[in-house]
Every structure is written in C-alpha cells, then in structure tokens.
Image 1 (cartoon, rainbow, N blue to C red):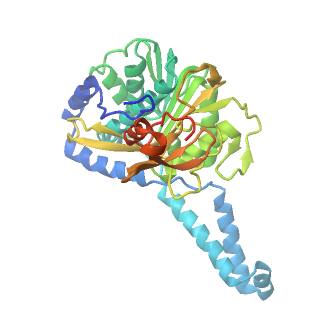
Image 2: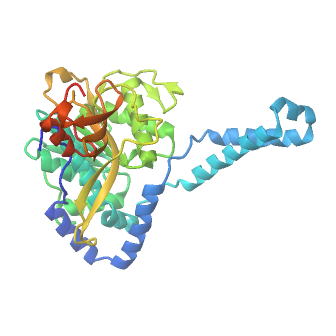
Image 3: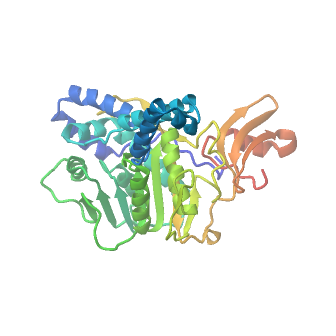
Length: 407
C-alpha cells in the first residue's frame, strides 16, 4: 500500500455489539422482523427528499390559472398557450406525487428492531470508513467529546470508540425515538436493561439545552429524515453551532443522498441555502473548511454531471442477520471549523480518485478530483510517469488519493 490509500478492507461490527444483538433477537419474532427489515431497508434507499412545502401554494395557483383559461380566451392568451399550462400542471403533479411518496418513519418497537437487523451493519461500516478517513487526514486529532445526532442504535459511537478510545471521554447520543434509545442502551449495557450506562455515555431524546460544543459531531443518515429544505438548513446550522472541531455528515449512496451532502457543503462553505442558491445565510460565519472527501473548498465539479460523488465500504454481515459480506454505498463530507490546515500534515494536496482506475494495455486510466476543484481524466503510462506511479494507481480504488502533486 502507498500513503494515499484510504479504502479499508472488510469491516465488522464489534463482537460485543453482535453478541448483545443476538440476545435481543432471541426474544423477538425474527420472521416478522425480517420482513419489516427488508421493506424498511428498500424504502430508505429509494426514498427521495420532498420539495419545499411552499410548493402547495404554487400548485393551487396553477390549477386556478388552468380553470381561468377555459373560461376566458383573453386569460389563455395572457398565459401563453394551452401546452405551457399543461406542462406547469404536470410538473405540479409530479412534485405532489414526490411529496406524497416521502413519509416520515416512526421508529416504534418493530421498526427499531428492523433497523437494528437491516441497517446497523451498513451504518457502522460507513461511519467507521468516514471516521477512519478523518483520522487519516488529521492524525493529530484526538477528540475528547462527541455528539451523534440521530444516533439510532449508536453505531457511529461504536465506530468512534474503536478509533479514539483512549481520548474520547464523553459520548452524547441523541435520537427522537425512545425505542431506538432503549435498544442503544441495551447494546451498551450488554443486554442488561436495568444497568446504568457506562461512564461518559449519555443517550437522550433531545439535544442538551445549555450551550456546549463537541470536538466531533456526527449526523449519519439523519438529514434525509427531515421533511424539507428548511428543516435541513435549521438542523445544519444547529449542528455547526455544536461543533468545535469537526462535523461529519453521511447520507445514502444515491443521487438524493449526494444532493443533501451538496446542500450541507453549500451552506457551511459558501453560505448558500439550497442547491440553486435561492437564499443566502444572513449570519454565515464563514469558518468551514472541507477536509474530505474533497481536496478543495470550491464548487463540486461532479455536480451537474452524469455521476455522483459516492463511495462504498464492504462489511461482514453479522450472524444475527444472515452472514456473508455486503457493501454499503454512501456520500459524505467532513468539515473542519476555524481550520488552519496549513499546520496539519495531511494528504489533502493530492488528487482523489473518483472514477476507475481502469487498466488498459499501455496505461491506467482514472478520473480524479484535483486541489483546483477540477475533474481530470488521467492516463498514467510507464514511459511518461514511471513504473512506481503506475503501480500505485493500479492499487487505488474510488476514494483513494494518488500521491502525485502535478497530475
């Protein structure tokens, strides 16, 4: 391996987590839980973010205009023509259908256990991979406190504990579902529901009201649970207030998840609310630096292209599920607050692989995102670049850096 490698080999849930989960499922009707787990997992991946709620008013106006156009010829002429009106209403119906398809999931007893069965291994895999990348970027970072917002079964906390066990002294897990919190409590107390949580671990339904910040703040698959752009912006601003060093945001590995990551990036790095720049953040603090996966702070060069900035991590499916291996796809961003990255020894100046590599007869092709914020297609040959660089690129996967300054 070379120093630009960020990808991990197959990861596994901690043994204690797996053993306690086994005991939990022994007390449940596993067949019912499995059926719910399949539906829940499929829905979470396929669900799309609804349009802003204000679209309801536009839809009413469009219908009113169409009615008027049938009643008055002059109104029809003022609107343009019938075809344009039909397009307006078709778009409104599409948005209406999109909003109807999105539903808030209530994590009751059954859904929470289904989540534990179907999603906890993948959530742990993505969290461990992203936090490992953060450690790779800033090996001097030794967090003492962390906040996991939308913690679910607590997999992000387990991942952080494995990486920074010696330094982390305070873990605050916040989730609105009491059933999820109960499961998380059980997992941390080795199935003893009557025992107190280990020292330093706090599981809450709401954020602490007092003004306290945390070295590491994580939001894993939580922004996609918010019903509109407005709610996502409010939550992002709140999480940024709670961050003293790093904010980590992870979402599903599809276009919808990538779009949510772009929203977060635009807000905190550029002070723009939304993808299209509809509104600016009035009190934007302008103190965020992108640490990963982007090697730059400029606009994402992949936005608007046919591909999305998505990564994957293989993991071992635990015995309480079905065994074997699987892969978790995700999109993410790691942001540093009040950053002075010049004083931090990192591989941030190298281009990151975002496509390929594909080995040809005489060269190795790959797409990289450069420090200038540009997508480049590289053709690495032995004759021009040398044997060592070609060999290193062949060993890269999507998400790795190429240790080459002037690609």
